[in-house]
Structures are given as C-alpha cells and as structure tokens.
Image 1 (cartoon, rainbow, N blue to C red):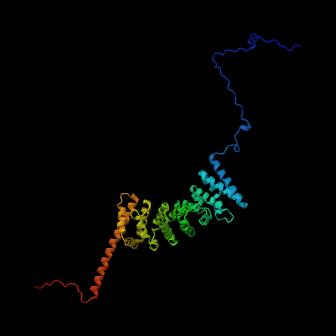
Image 2 (image 1 turned 180 degrees about the vertical axis):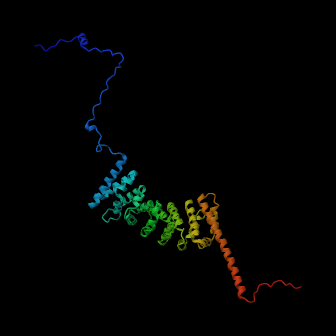
Image 3 (image 1 turned 120 degrees about the horizontal axis):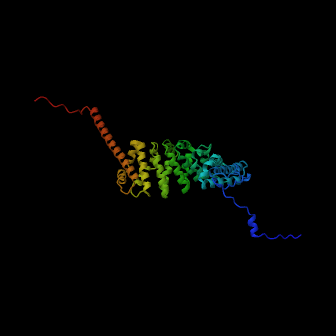
Amino acid sequence: MNSYLPRRSDRDRDRDRPTKQPPKRGHQQTTPKPHPDPPRLADTPTRSARAPTAMEAKPHTARVLVGRLRGAAAACDGAATAAAVADIRLASKDDPDIRAPLAEAGAVPLLAAQLTSSAGAPAASVDAAAALLNISISAREQVASAPGLLDALTAALRTDAAHHAAATVHSLLCAESQRAAIGARRPLLAALVALLRAPPSTRATKDALKALFGVALYPPNRATLVSLGAVQALFALVMTDGRDGIVEDATAVVAQVAGCAESLEAFRWVSGVRILLDLVESGGAATPRARENAAAALLNLVVAGGDAAADEVANVGGAEETVRELAEDSTASPRGKAKAEALLRALEGAAAAAARKREHRFADFLNGIVQSDPYISSPSPASTQG
C-alpha cells in the first residue's frame, strides 16, 4: 500500500472551506467574548502569601529585634546580647519609623537593664544608652514610664555611656510633664553636676549642661541644684574652660539657676556677680550669646533675691555703667539689650529705694536725738504780742 497521498489543489481547499452566512436583517452580529480561565489555586491571594505593608513591616522587624535581645539576655549569652543591642541601636538610628514599634515591643526595659548589668560589656552599655536616646526622640512617654529607667540612667552617667545617658535625660526633659519627676531624683541630678567636674569631654559636658538646663526650667528644681553645688561647678567651667560652646551653655544654666532666692549666697561664695559683670562688659565675653546670658543671670538674681541681690550687684564698682553700656550698645542683640534695660531699671529702683531708706534712717536718727535730749526743743511759736 502506497502511503503517499495526492496533494490537494487550491480549488479543492476553497470548495471544502465553509462559507460565511450573511447576517439576518434586523439582527446585529456580535462577536462572542472569550471567558477568562478560572483562577488557579496558586494565583488566589491569601493572607499568608500577601506581602506585608510598610506599616506592618516595622512592628514585625521590631518584634524580631527585641525577641533576639530577650532570648540572648535570658540565655546569659554576652556576645549575642551585645550583638542584639548593637542591631537595635543601628535600626533606631537609621529608621525613625521603627523607634515607636521598638518601644511597643518592650525594648526599653531590656535596654535599660544593660546599663546596670555587671556582666555586660562596656560596648553593650554604650549601645544600649544610644538606642534609648534614639527611641526617646519618637516615643518619649513610653521611655519615661519604663520601670527603673531613671535609676539605670543615673548609673550610666558614671560610665563610658555618660554622654548618651545625659542626652537621654535631656530628651525626656523636653516633655514638661517629666521635669518634676526627674528633678525629684537627687542622685540623678548629682551625677549630672559631677559630670561638670569630670575631666574635659566636650560631648559629655555639653550633654550634661543641656540636661541641667532642662532641669532648671522647672523653678522648684533650682534650689536642689544649688544645694548640690551646681553654682560652683558652673562658674568653674566659665572661668577655666575656653571652649565657646561650653561657656555659652554654662552661662545659660547659670541664668536659670539664678532664679531662686537660695542662689544669692552661692553666688557670693564664688564672686559670681563680679564674674557675670565682667562678661557683660564689652569685650568681656567670648561671644554675644554668653554676654546676653550673663545679663539674664544678673536680672534673674535680682528678681529672685530682691533688695539684697540688687544691693549685691550695685555695690560692685562700675556695675551700673557696665549694664548701661550693654543697654545702649547698637551691636548687641535685642534680647541682650532688653535684659540689660530691665536690669538697669531694677538697679536704679534699688538705688532710689536705698536713698529713701537712708533719708528715713537719718530722719529717725534726728528725731531720736530730739526726743532724748531735753536741751533740744522744737522752735517756739511766733509771739502774738507787740
């Protein structure tokens, strides 16, 4: 049998091809729409297969990081704990959006524990303090309310993590509601003041000054700072530290601490009024801001200390002229001139009051002589007889 089949001609193919029927009148020809294939099981989106959104990814990452730290700390694995703390620090530094989720996942107590852990490495303590600082910027209330946090920061202020711990205290003090609670922690304030006496460290000193400034913004805390020796430590910085930024920050804290009656005696011990007047004098301060702060400190001292403080300032030779020079200085800032003008009015008022007191005392002295000496009498009335 031959398998070869004869080739069909084009005419045969055309004959066998079905012919198209013309559409019937009154009916519109429609083209059937293809039906889509039903979705396969693998193509159907499910909750487990859906990629997490950015809002969902942050809490998940935070839980993973905190879980690693919790597990390493529970296992007392120092190396793994240090690595987990370092990862949390890096994440909180690079991604501000993960800070609040870290706090919600329970990172704060675990990090605070690293500040007081005797088994932890110094690097882990520094990383933990830095991570707490980062988290506090975005989750201040959650950090401040963590149990034992302030005690942990107090301990860290005496370690290599001091600058991060002081910066964290300053961050918490940005919330006005925290100033009373932090001011009630006398050991914490003492540790901040001690940082001012420590060997020079620009970062630690500046962070401590910023924290003390925040503490002193709450008036009841000022007397506590005076009793802890803050005035002496601050003036020591002003006199011995040549760094402009340190002198500016130190005089800013002095201006706040001066706003309590207890500061006057402390100022007397260190000749604080004389030092501040030297800074107010033209060319006496390294920067205009330090000059302004000195004027503000003298004004606050007079307002809080009353006549005794005003006399203390006025009794320094050339005090009024020095203050007047700042008030009339066209190159001074508006803030500095306003402080000087207010201080000048206070000094002039105190001088007038002192003059009135001297007049009254002199009058009382004369009256006393008249009353006690029988040979001194008042003039006799004019005679009515010719």
